[in-house]
Amino acid sequence: MFKKPVIVFEGIEGSGKTLHINYLSSYLKKNKIKFIKLREPGGSINSEKIRKLILNDKSNFNKFTDLLMYLAARNENMENLIKKNYQKKIILIDRFTDSTLAYQHYGMGMNYKLISLINNHITKKIKINLTFLNLVNSKNMRKRLSKRKKLNRYDKFKMKFYNKVQNGYIKIANSNKKKYKIINSNKDIKFNKNQVINAVNKILK
Image (cartoon, rainbow, N blue to C red):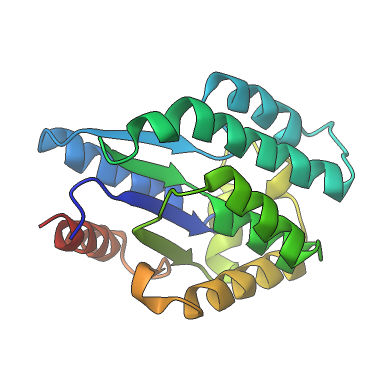
């Protein structure tokens, strides 16, 4: 039971994580439960500036540069948002430390120990209480991305890359099953929304 938990939504593009975090936000607001919501990259003012650089179609950063910018954006969120609200409000995060491992290590082959070292230094004593890992098959992913009005740089990788990332997420989740809730995003949206709400209520009560 956690009165003011940190809840993270993870998953590849088109997996429904943003839909579910927005739905949970509406649910908490309706029930007058205090929370903050942020996304990565983005969230704080400086992190949003970094987001524009990372995801810009015209950007072609080296993968190590990409990694450092993601971590820099996270550090800005930690210093300006997360630390100030930790254990005071529920914190909802659209992508967090697992994303960096899934994309930069499992997807791009960056050093696992280096990423973990910097992640741990940035997050320090902040503990994640629950992570929703949203999984999606390639057919539904393509279908959902095709409906987006605008695609960013990370929406345009080959399917092989996304498969590596999603498999990386699964490995991370399997290493600590108690803190992860798998959401099969190929199932009915209403069913999955209820799954999310039930899991959150369980750790709040």
